Image 1: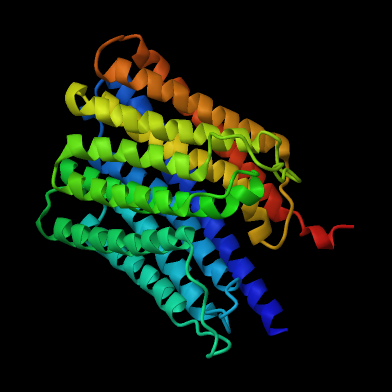
Image 2: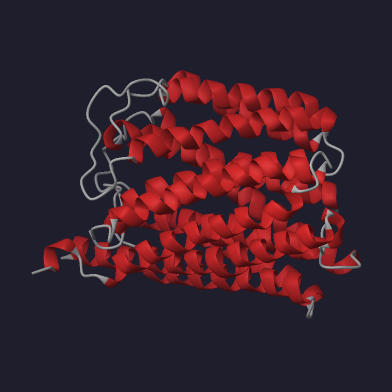
Length: 423
């Protein structure tokens, strides 16, 4: 009975994190991103839009959406550890409340400018406390058998743990940055270079290795890929760490080369582009699931290639922007849309995905919109083809449609009863 109760608590909590994450994904994340792109396209310059707005959009996407998913899945995973004796109900719900309030305050202060000197540091401390509660919950679990020695950690576990530590580092740096900005800044926007460094820390330091780690764990099971090479994957992660350090030292050419090498090595280690060694498990998901996993890794390489190209050839932010979009939308969002619709229904009470067709169309439109954006942004921003400015907003609307379809599918899944309760 204790195990059943613990499982129910964890399912309710991960559902709350997913629901709030999708809210941030839809409203302050995607809708604000569409609004931003329309404003940029009308003025035909990136400088026409408030930096605070752009940063609020990025915060909502990285921390509000994906960050909420990471915390929710992290708390849920506590019930799957054989050494866990109880689920930290109070700490978990307190963490969800503080995290959600913190993200909302950060977005409100950045977009409206209302009381931003109070809201920004307060948002930072709430997010930090939420993360510390999660870490405390993880560290407090004890072996059921004190004489039992856990097996040696696999490579995927090492990478996920390291990425989780990086998550705490990123949230801590964000707190100090928000506090410094509130005390000495003149607007609710961080300096451009430092903001980009924080984005690299959050995306490359946390999200990308987290995805690699869980891909190493799940893709051999779900997609039938060959078992990953743990040594090469760890080396790829080491290259990421070196790349992030190089970015903070402003050694951008070195960082660009290291990012590309890390991506190629990880793809080789995960055997993503090699033939599957066993049939994929496609029950209750669309049959194109393995294909879209591979497409996401195409975007990872495209992002790194554009990053290297931007070091010497970017003059107006177009190539940098295309690189970042290929990474955050093509790879990260593409992976969340594919893997998320595969595992989230099970996490939220052993449910079945509402519609495999919606899964397909959300993934297809996401990648089509990303292709339009990554192609058109350098052409427009760098003044290679001025007509591209008129086409750019269409990429945003295609991606918005994809996000809405993804949200509808997950919401429809949550509204239906679990599989074992259906007639």
